[in-house]
Image 1 (cartoon, one colour):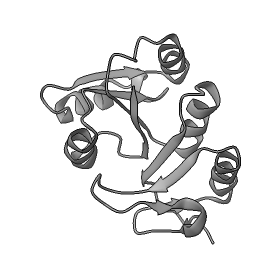
Image 2 (cartoon, rainbow, N blue to C red; image 1 turned 90 degrees about the vertical axis):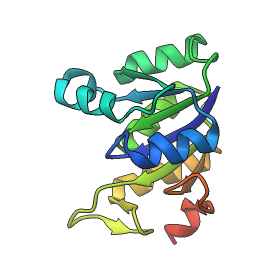
Image 3 (tube, rainbow, N blue to C red; image 1 turned 180 degrees about the vertical axis):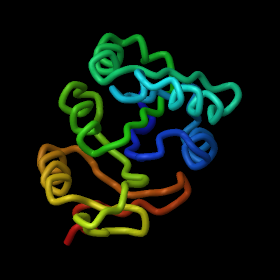
Image 4 (cartoon, rainbow, N blue to C red; image 1 turned 120 degrees about the vertical axis):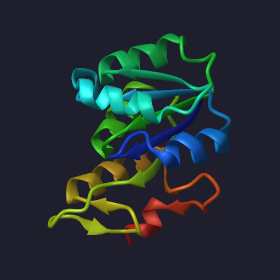
Length: 157
């Protein structure tokens, strides 16, 4: 059962490993990333950040979608972490069971607009989020599991 789909450019770190894992009672973290599966340094770093007693799986986007849709992940209380809003959309497009996306942390750049303390969006990302919300996918901002939800639509106004 998917407990959380989170966009966080840092992937697995203290907020995910402890706040979210404990907050949603997760027993498995899926890092869905085409980049990570081909990068040994990233994989090693993520393994070091994994909380004890929680399974860590790293798959590319295509294999992540296949695994979620096949039902093999149903036995887990699953947190799925992606690095970008584009990847979250790819997952949501491929997996009808994804009905909510948490924005945790996105990178700031000269071309982004800040909509909350840790969320910076490109114009294209705003369009993607609007499309997701228009089709009924909840998009919310929360750094920690105990934080109050901030509706992305309201934050983008």
